Image (cartoon, rainbow, N blue to C red; front, side, top):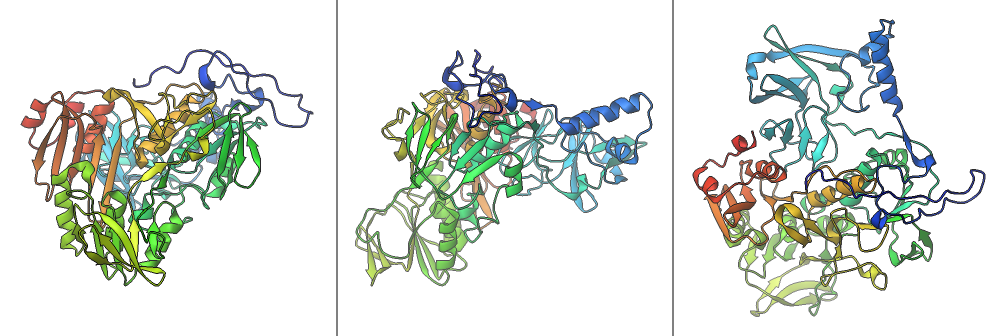
Length: 622
């Protein structure tokens, strides 16, 4: 349920050694709180509790001084020109004030929004029933303009991928995305629309939220296995919620968390180029990384990990965010050279470097195969996609896959559908042909395999952590496993989706992984989660066209499609005459609108869809 209460009960912490005693503090004693869930911050040792942020104390003191008519310094005066509505993020801003007329108030009548430019920075102004708001105008995900987004009740969703921002605070509240936005003081002065802010706020299109001040903590660390988007978002939100316990991330990767989505959309990008945060960000949050290291075993009784380097690592709590491993070809010739798989950034780099001027065959026609085919088309001599089904992208249905295939073919990509690969043939030790069950041999100097992933849970075999028949880790709504003090998030889990009455489901998409990390960042300190998870995913081809999807189509029994699946369309998935998911291509913002409808529990019926031929749903959100 949205914002449901945290798990009841209170955990107890065994007092650690005296401050002069060497060594870490002992484990928390399992108390009434099941599976190690902390109620608020009470279960942290005194050394790990947070204090009121210094920036916030300074801002509050400045306000008090003004009320008492004490003189303020120039810096304090500038700081108070537009204090942050929530949080200390910009409270110490002493940069020069910027105040200027950006247009007429009549340009933004009630119920509308409009983009302006201030010092070459895009600013979105929203008029909500006479109340004006102003925020950065570009989404913090991929800098897409927000003026075409879905606005309702103080929140705006990006029209591209559905990221959601609070217009009063600028905070990102729903993913995908990496940062929050700045807010600006905007007012109607005698018919002029006036913005008042500072040069600092205008210097950037995004804002990284400031965590509370953390006291020194010497407890045994929380260990996170894996460094994908779920892990990165958990780190951010756990720190924002006051968790001060040291965090150690153990990862097979060579880089700190990066935007894995770009590995298939822009495979030439380097790990440092697409890093989600810099090293200073993690250092400030007291997060350490042990890279190029894997966990080979887990002893849940002793709360100890076995590592690939032969060492052991103890944990106070364990967060498993290992994602998946690529599924490998098992046909003859699969071990030939120039056969590539894609999971890590280095593998994307190898594909980008090795496909120039080559005949490339992509085996698999789901997201990885199709995105790689689109990203390398201009540099390869030829690109062929082999699909085992009737059409590519089977999750959307054959009519949508057919429309996407035609667009690819218009750009010179060749397809084999209903095809089965039975072998790879080589010239010397390198691949030269892909052999199909029909007997046809497709020329292939490079092969990229994208036939799915398997959950990365092999290291858990022999432990007490439950794994289901498919290899995923079942978790509850708080992302707890069956073992105390062990959590799991991201692609590796099967989790409940209560808005759809789904008891347990595995979803492997960037936005959902980020939502897992966000929610665990609340649950692990005993705070109510910010709201229910609404799955959202997208795919982009040739940086020209793509698909969006919102909701969960599991168990759907009917569909309604508006538009032409060869071009722009909106497809509704229904269950018991109610919309449970939406897919679209083109300019429609039905998907982000439905993310908000689903989030707020607003039911849309088959009759609603049939009469709403324009696919505009803003009125249902008011």
